[in-house]
Image (cartoon, rainbow, N blue to C red; front, side, top):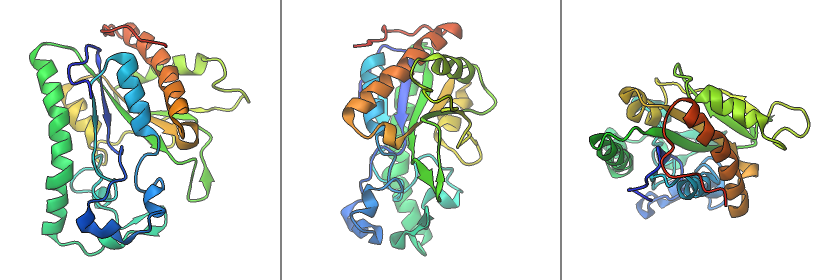
Length: 255
């Protein structure tokens, strides 16, 4: 989406889809299971698309379910092709041969990351300073433990962008109506280069600014809510980019 976008941001969505190729026979799961959070990041693709429009930002979406292959996991991670997710066994992922695992990586993982690299390499060749934003969503409850955060930012050692975006989100009216901490800082997830793949490989390796964002799924369940949260996040991101002296490119369209 928008490969020639003029904004400073490049968006990626690792868990955009719950698609399972027909030859994998639904991984042995029910149709209902494939609509759950275990199969994809519910609402994340819609938020990414809305942000792409608001920021005139290129956006790259992974095409298959995270249960087929998780495009945000290091290739050596067991969770790259999980055998169980949030207590649900994944029959189609049990006892996979090395060749079967490699086939999934070649079919879905590598093309996605090649597409991200193509966008970033082209921008780098033009001397365009870019910021990588990875869009995710989190289930409201995991393993029986509720999540209080409506939005959360994950970062590693480079806090240049995380700190101003956190501060600006926390200043927004209506974001914290009950006095609770609803903007997470490395909660419930941090950014771990030993586990996560996308941001470490594409941004940290280049020394580019980056941020991984989690929207709580009950907050982004509809197209209207996805747009609303894209606007909320964009209102914080755009001035934060100015603070760190990154020109935002096309103006943020708050309409």
